[in-house]
Image (cartoon, rainbow, N blue to C red; front, side, top):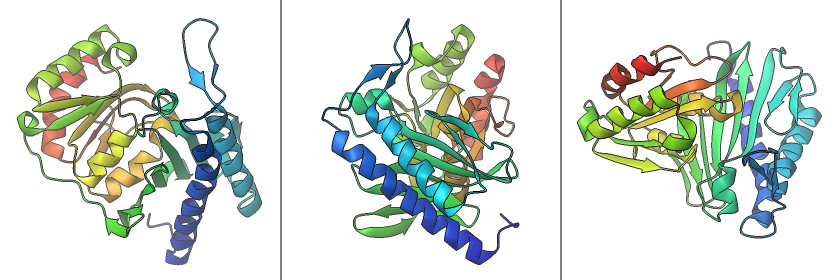
Length: 270
């Protein structure tokens, strides 16, 4: 974040909040209503709704108007100038399965890369009126009652940790499932099905570790600045920085807890 001038950071931060409100305007009228569900796959099930598409269109339109030289990578509408110095990475509704089930665990993920590195991001849950936003200068939660800073909590032992993943049987391969099972057996408590809302809970200090695999860039880019701004860590399963294409990811509030989990995760690292 050293490359940012303070006025530029403030400008982009404020714009990121605007993008969350624009996405909410497209999503909320369809939540728990006629959301126009379709399936992306001919075999299997990968749902997409009009909320996914409408929110991404709304975000892209505002970026094009305000920052026409910026690139965009989005789940629904692909890439536009992905090699630009500034690139927005979008998942308009992360957790579409939760969305169509009426569960308020879906989020809108909006990240911004500068020269290939995630530097600003937000995890928005507009039904609850929450925007978790972060950068190297810190992270905060914007909510109906105001704002408050975000801070991960200490948890040096995996045996004391509350951990999460989305869907072990659906997202992990054989070796990955074995690694997750070992981590889960050591942890105090595990929660499933929270998608990227679990990332926000690490930043908020209520969860300690999230383990995922098979992620795309739009599933994780936005979360990295939020987690790191709150004092947490995001790595791949080898303990290295997450690449530009996602993959296997571990998010933790405490480095010591992450290191214990990585003992198992490294055995299944791609």
